[in-house]
Length: 302
Image (cartoon, rainbow, N blue to C red; front, side, top):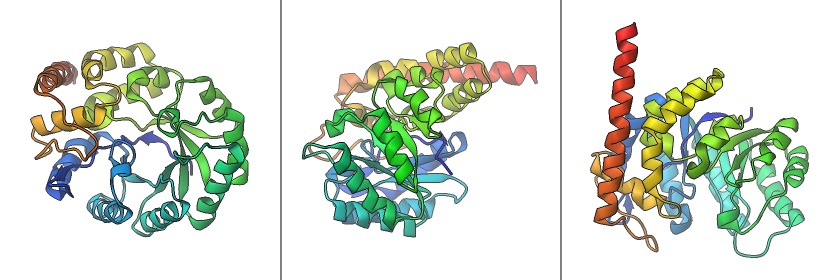
């Protein structure tokens, strides 16, 4: 089945360079009620800064901790096909529902080269393969028609995470029967309004209740109501969490509210500054205040 629903990309908690399982357990408590699952070890999870062994260790621990009814998508993007295959087989063996894979990001890509890379992965797996369309990181703009063609040749490719801002791809991929997932927080509501089938972004793991309500209203056809919730409860945070430094800022906020024990990031990333942390916490508190007020109003009507 194609991958759909609210599946936030999540940061990986670290302490002294090691995976912090206790913080991750608190993170699950913070977000799981409001999401359909999550996406592990993508860009937000700092996968490019980890060894294959570290990625496998984290994937195994997280999959063991996560209730089976939740969908876990594991990132396997790598410049080495062999390492990507090893990550894919390991994730599937440990219970992942799907794999997220972008095109390799060092050598110049061609459509046929990417297809050759994906064909080897597709042949090695028995679970869903989500193509990660991320031109900023891969320096590759995927053609909508190329992706449609690949999906007809690859058994497990039925879903695409769209980080590109060319929203015309959504209609083209829907017409081909593909599921499309929102992939970039700064234009998140535009993806929702364009009719995506799910979301692989950061916002839902920070504001699970508010995003769940937003998503429910979008799915029920109440776009104006969804925008009202999104604008009041989520957008203040997105205005200050940044483009390119969202990993550090999200970790800073999660540490500030007591979910993560540390805001530590791996080199070459740098932590958020103290003044940025103040803005983040102010935005979070503002959003939470609006969420609490909405829920109080809803409770009064029951």
